[in-house]
Figure 1 (cartoon, rainbow, N blue to C red):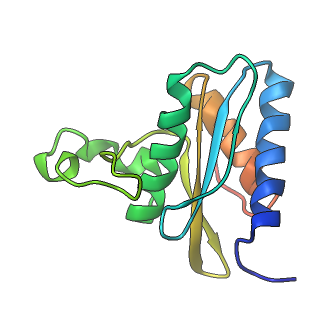
Figure 2: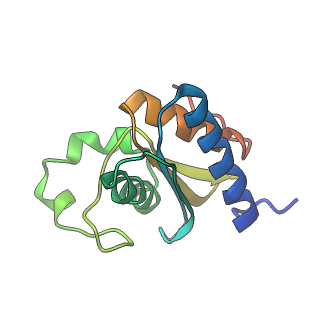
Length: 139
Protein backbone atom coordinates (compact mmCIF):
# COMPACT_ATOMS: atom_id res chain seq x y z
CA UNK A 1 0.00 0.00 0.00
CA UNK A 2 1.20 3.49 -0.80
CA UNK A 3 2.38 5.15 2.39
CA UNK A 4 1.40 8.66 1.30
CA UNK A 5 -1.84 10.57 1.61
CA UNK A 6 -3.78 9.78 -1.56
CA UNK A 7 -7.22 10.99 -2.59
CA UNK A 8 -8.64 7.58 -1.70
CA UNK A 9 -7.06 7.59 1.75
CA UNK A 10 -8.27 11.14 2.34
CA UNK A 11 -11.79 10.01 1.42
CA UNK A 12 -11.53 7.13 3.91
CA UNK A 13 -10.45 9.55 6.65
CA UNK A 14 -13.30 11.88 5.73
CA UNK A 15 -15.82 9.03 5.90
CA UNK A 16 -14.55 7.95 9.32
CA UNK A 17 -14.78 11.50 10.68
CA UNK A 18 -18.32 11.83 9.31
CA UNK A 19 -19.30 8.50 10.88
CA UNK A 20 -18.05 9.71 14.26
CA UNK A 21 -19.95 12.99 13.90
CA UNK A 22 -23.11 11.05 13.05
CA UNK A 23 -22.57 8.78 16.06
CA UNK A 24 -22.37 11.75 18.44
CA UNK A 25 -25.19 13.56 16.65
CA UNK A 26 -23.31 16.74 15.74
CA UNK A 27 -23.15 17.95 12.11
CA UNK A 28 -19.61 18.92 11.15
CA UNK A 29 -17.48 20.26 8.35
CA UNK A 30 -14.34 18.22 7.76
CA UNK A 31 -11.37 19.31 5.66
CA UNK A 32 -8.32 17.29 4.69
CA UNK A 33 -5.39 19.05 3.06
CA UNK A 34 -2.15 17.79 1.56
CA UNK A 35 1.30 18.65 2.89
CA UNK A 36 1.22 22.03 1.15
CA UNK A 37 -2.09 22.91 2.76
CA UNK A 38 -4.16 22.45 -0.40
CA UNK A 39 -7.62 20.95 -0.08
CA UNK A 40 -7.73 17.24 -0.89
CA UNK A 41 -11.09 16.19 0.58
CA UNK A 42 -13.95 18.08 2.16
CA UNK A 43 -17.43 17.43 3.48
CA UNK A 44 -20.08 19.61 5.07
CA UNK A 45 -22.75 17.55 6.74
CA UNK A 46 -26.39 18.58 6.54
CA UNK A 47 -27.04 21.03 9.35
CA UNK A 48 -23.42 22.13 9.84
CA UNK A 49 -23.18 25.89 10.28
CA UNK A 50 -22.02 28.04 7.40
CA UNK A 51 -18.94 29.27 9.28
CA UNK A 52 -17.75 25.71 9.91
CA UNK A 53 -16.59 25.47 6.30
CA UNK A 54 -13.89 28.12 6.53
CA UNK A 55 -12.99 27.18 10.09
CA UNK A 56 -12.35 23.51 9.24
CA UNK A 57 -10.28 24.42 6.18
CA UNK A 58 -8.28 27.07 8.07
CA UNK A 59 -7.52 24.66 10.93
CA UNK A 60 -6.27 22.02 8.49
CA UNK A 61 -4.19 24.53 6.53
CA UNK A 62 -2.68 25.90 9.74
CA UNK A 63 -1.73 22.46 11.06
CA UNK A 64 -0.09 21.59 7.75
CA UNK A 65 1.75 24.92 7.54
CA UNK A 66 3.11 24.75 11.08
CA UNK A 67 3.44 20.93 11.16
CA UNK A 68 1.78 21.06 14.53
CA UNK A 69 -1.51 20.40 16.23
CA UNK A 70 -3.62 23.51 16.44
CA UNK A 71 -3.98 23.10 20.20
CA UNK A 72 -0.20 23.50 20.54
CA UNK A 73 -0.34 26.77 18.58
CA UNK A 74 -2.89 28.43 20.85
CA UNK A 75 -0.24 30.26 22.94
CA UNK A 76 0.70 32.24 19.81
CA UNK A 77 -2.74 33.45 18.71
CA UNK A 78 -2.24 36.89 20.22
CA UNK A 79 1.26 37.32 18.80
CA UNK A 80 1.54 39.80 15.95
CA UNK A 81 3.79 37.54 13.86
CA UNK A 82 1.26 34.70 14.04
CA UNK A 83 -1.59 36.86 12.80
CA UNK A 84 0.44 38.65 10.13
CA UNK A 85 1.02 35.56 7.98
CA UNK A 86 -1.30 33.68 5.67
CA UNK A 87 -1.69 29.94 5.26
CA UNK A 88 -2.31 28.14 1.95
CA UNK A 89 -5.84 29.47 1.39
CA UNK A 90 -4.83 33.09 1.94
CA UNK A 91 -6.41 33.14 5.38
CA UNK A 92 -4.77 33.95 8.69
CA UNK A 93 -3.78 30.87 10.68
CA UNK A 94 -6.37 29.35 13.01
CA UNK A 95 -5.26 27.36 16.04
CA UNK A 96 -8.00 24.95 17.06
CA UNK A 97 -8.29 21.68 18.93
CA UNK A 98 -9.30 19.77 15.79
CA UNK A 99 -6.48 20.87 13.50
CA UNK A 100 -4.13 17.88 13.47
CA UNK A 101 -1.25 17.07 11.09
CA UNK A 102 -1.26 13.83 9.14
CA UNK A 103 2.15 12.22 9.54
CA UNK A 104 2.73 8.91 7.76
CA UNK A 105 6.04 7.06 8.01
CA UNK A 106 7.62 10.08 9.66
CA UNK A 107 6.64 12.48 6.85
CA UNK A 108 4.10 15.28 6.98
CA UNK A 109 1.52 14.33 4.36
CA UNK A 110 -1.22 16.81 5.23
CA UNK A 111 -3.66 17.70 7.99
CA UNK A 112 -7.28 17.38 9.04
CA UNK A 113 -9.50 20.15 10.39
CA UNK A 114 -12.98 19.68 11.86
CA UNK A 115 -15.55 22.25 12.97
CA UNK A 116 -19.14 22.15 14.14
CA UNK A 117 -19.23 21.08 17.76
CA UNK A 118 -17.28 21.77 20.91
CA UNK A 119 -13.51 21.56 20.74
CA UNK A 120 -13.64 18.08 22.27
CA UNK A 121 -16.32 16.90 19.80
CA UNK A 122 -14.40 18.32 16.84
CA UNK A 123 -11.19 16.68 18.04
CA UNK A 124 -12.94 13.31 18.53
CA UNK A 125 -14.08 13.42 14.90
CA UNK A 126 -10.61 14.42 13.69
CA UNK A 127 -9.11 11.56 15.71
CA UNK A 128 -11.58 9.13 14.12
CA UNK A 129 -10.52 10.32 10.68
CA UNK A 130 -6.87 9.85 11.52
CA UNK A 131 -7.54 6.39 12.96
CA UNK A 132 -8.78 5.36 9.50
CA UNK A 133 -5.23 6.14 8.32
CA UNK A 134 -3.67 4.12 11.12
CA UNK A 135 -2.70 7.22 13.10
CA UNK A 136 -3.36 7.33 16.83
CA UNK A 137 -3.66 10.77 18.42
CA UNK A 138 -4.08 11.03 22.20
CA UNK A 139 -7.13 12.84 23.54
